[in-house]
Image (cartoon, rainbow, N blue to C red):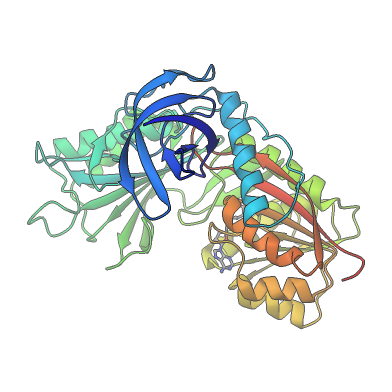
Length: 452
Ligand code: SAH
């Protein structure tokens, strides 16, 4: 059928409607285009189409530059101009806040462009698997919606240190017949390679394996130092649990080099251990935190509570302009890092950190009568814990700064905070932290209303 693309879906698919009003999602089609599509999937309410021919291309359509674009699931906006991707991210945020957040005409500012929309990622998680055709193990990226690993020479999202490390690992695995975890009869092997890069320190490399023993470790260490010299900062092994929750879920062993990686953010210095969350796009995080500071509007007298604080980055960035900050975080290792970071930056007198579930620990602090002036929440993709949301609605916190990497769950939580009039959404600032992908980061400012 011939379709006019009039909208955008949350995964950057074009959206059109059939003559009888049914919604059709068309991956890779852009708003304003007329396309000839073949329907490849049909459910009760929604159709999915595949482009057969673009009859009228958008002036914003561009040639993707990665040879794996469309095959690898990582990038979603290489077929459009960077400016259009920014505009569409804002549109996605607006749609979510209007539909899920049930707010009319929310104030959504233009998406903050990134000065470095390529090669910006400081963390890579790569899959190791046996190539079905050649039978040899290798490191690469997952093919979209599958478990097949595509071998990869370069990636335009990752820092060069990460992709260079992958090439070394591939060479090492081939030269010494290192098995992948799925190699039949090997009794264990490498399942993931995780890279973390610091602008100041270089590379932390983590091999996650299904058994403790790794063959040919010394040659690997010497191959890494030949390739990177001083830039190889540490080599870790994670021995994965039986049913790991993620690529780093297991016993953590330092094989060579230093324990933590040091990087700078917001003018402060941070120590990061292998399993601690750290923002992936450093240049843009500096800007993101500027927007967080603007939203928090501190004068030096405030008490700030930072739920989901990771290794204390936002807490400490705000501590300079606050009287006191408390950070809460589920990951105990990250809380150790946060305490070390408070000392490292001379902010230990102002900052306290607690390990705990935000839905329990922060609620407990509020129930005990702690009255922060500003609450910062920066939850994982699933959004804020329901128990914490009701404590916020009941509590007397005048400002909530919501930092989010998922506009859908942010919109849901904003709906809960605003539905009975306790809070008013002032604005949302989208920031392009994940260029070339469908993802967008947001800073929302909510203030308590007089009636509440
Ligand atoms: N604000 C930090 C971290 C944000 S990422 C930064 O900008 O770097 C979200 C963090 O929430 C992660 O560190 C994750 O470990 C933590 N987290 C996940 N679930 C949690 C929970 N239930 N309670 C508290 N923290 C949680």
